[in-house]
Image 1 (tube, protein in one colour):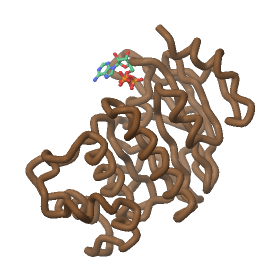
Image 2 (cartoon, helix red, strand yellow):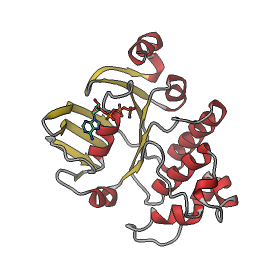
Image 3 (cartoon, helix red, strand yellow):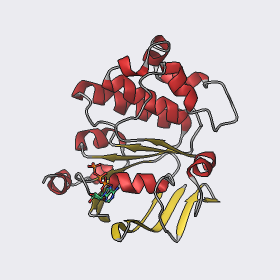
Length: 229
Ligand SMILES: Nc1ncnc2c1ncn2[C@@H]1O[C@H](COP(=O)(O)OP(=O)(O)OP(=O)(O)O)[C@@H](O)[C@H]1O
């Protein structure tokens, strides 16, 4: 269980995240949807301790994250796939994945990683920069998963990825949840993608949550309205 209460984030004097609260359960996928500039990246970076924030509660599986640095948050079970993937283009696929192990106890890439991403096994000796956008996204997810997270945060994983490959990313995320029973929180603008993976959809607007639906009774027209400029 991941629980955040009254989270605030500012850039200098300018507050961008306004008192957000949410809970996400084990084995639940939550999508946070919003237009460009609404605060999704700021939210995720603050959850990972990359940006300073204040909150009255930040707990993962009973462990209090308040004031914790990024590495402590990773050790407590958070993992992050940043927007734009941020893989290391001059390192091989295998080396990229191993960078995820730096702060973990194990030095070995868990076996289920290559079962989830056979293409990464095939390409393990290639440079990350030579992979397609979809393959780089898989690599960024694999790198995040090697720490055995309880909560996986993905910032706009479909950005810049072609529609046929978006389906593959959705399949992989559903498989990860089935295999590992973790919490997945994804920020997105593509509703067809979140409908394939999410149990619940929350809409963020100017750093505030303005709408929430369970997937099974999503008001698609309303959400699309919020997402259009
Ligand atoms: N380093 C920064 N300094 C000041 N303001 C920032 C900074 N980074 C982002 N902002 C502002 O914070 C707000 C939220 O931006 P953020 O990048 O979190 O939105 P987003 O929903 O992730 O959008 P996108 O999809 O474009 O990444 C925007 O108004 C943005 O201009």
